[in-house]
Every structure is written in structure tokens, then in C-alpha cells.
Image (tube, rainbow, N blue to C red; front, side, top):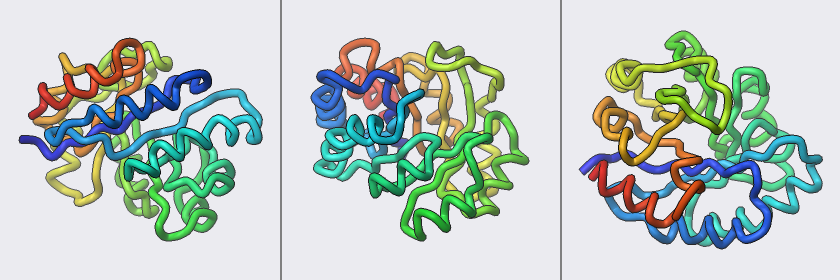
Length: 207
């Protein structure tokens, strides 16, 4: 049995019945790969509208003890009292985010395929580093391709958790789990079909 966990990333459209879908996905988790984090990732909305959409999703996560992480925006994370923020390389400084959100906040940083960026993030006080993309993905344009070896290298040297992201599906996830990913960050593989079946499929493949 692996110690790997699922980190769900929202689709860009989180309105309509998405809160129910999120609840269904989390409730389908299996012990082999529990859902422990959810990233709220929306683009092009003002903070007020983003906060309105986030509220029911944050409640779903809180009721299920799943960390609610805001993508990109320290200001929105602070407004919501979110569990943390995920920073891309252009989204701000880990130390500044820590000062704004406090010691308890979970701060993650995108490191692409760069060992240097990962070490810098760790030194700055990030709580996890994210590597990827490992596979082609329709969620965003892929500029950097990572290989599973970078996960093994990180695990060998550092205590900080690492997240694998980018085109991950139940069918291709096993090499990443075996290489040492602490979390699989998944989006399309869950939300483009039956979310409950997908969450169970990840667990069955990795367990």
C-alpha cells in the first residue's frame, strides 16, 4: 500500500452542481489513496465573485477534513481564511505569503522540472513542492516536462512533501507513486467523467 494521497484541483467552472460533485469525489475516497487537499483554481474573476464560488466548496472540504488551498492569490486565501495557497513561479514570494497567512498556512510552490527551484522553495519555507507536468495535459499549456526520477531524487534528500502534477490518470499514475510522489494532483482525470469512479480508480491502481 502506498502512502500517496490525492490532491484534487478544481476545473475552471466551479458553479452549478460542482459543490455536490466535489462532495461525491471526496466521499468516494479509499484508504489506499485518500483525498487530503483541494485546490480552488479559477481564472479571470474578481475577488468578490471568486469568494462567492469558493464558499460552498470550502464548506464541503471543512466538513471532510480536506485542506482547502487557493491557487495563485494570497489575498483571496487570506480573505477566505483558507488552509493555504499554491504559488506558481510568477505568483509571489513564499516568505511574503507566510507573513500574510501565518505559520499554520500550507504554502505550496510550482517547481516545474527544476531541482534548483524546488530547493529554493524549500529554503524559503514552502510546505510542499510541485513537480510537473509529467504527461500531456489539456488543463494548461505545458512548458516544462518532468521525469519521475526528480521525485525519487527529492525524496532521497529532503523531508518536504512533493506533489506530482500534469496529465495524471489512474492508468499512468503508478510510476509516479513508485518514484516517491507524496501527492498526485489531478484535475481532468476526475472531473471529465464520473468523479467518484475516478477517485476509486486512483486508489485501486496505487494500492
